[in-house]
Length: 135
Image (cartoon, rainbow, N blue to C red; front, side, top):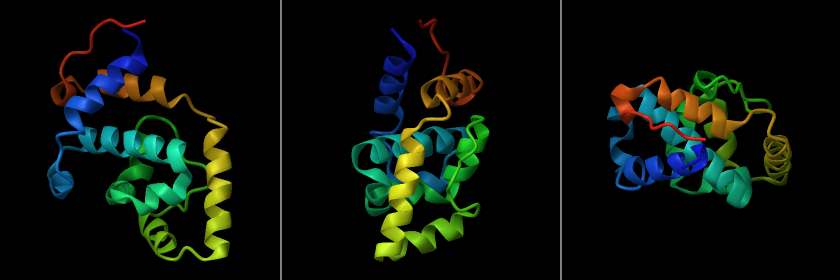
């Protein structure tokens, strides 16, 4: 099993059965995993517009802290979660262009999110269980 396959399996067991209404009650390591997993899935599928439109937007308030927690500081995102939420409410042409620029920046992948997220999960066995040897 490789790291990405492990993370997919983990997401299926951790995120899929998870009820969004309970997100605030979850431990910070879970929030980190969930926020980054949803961010990457949504942005890769339809850009930041999709991320803010779908239920993944419920994780937006923690996404900056989550990216910092795995050592992938966000570039181009407003520094405060409230600024992200405010921007997400108004999809004017100017906001759409800003989101498109964020998409382009995200797709450059300055950080290997799979590697960083896997390492983060390894550091938190209390939340995710033991991590098997992977290649």
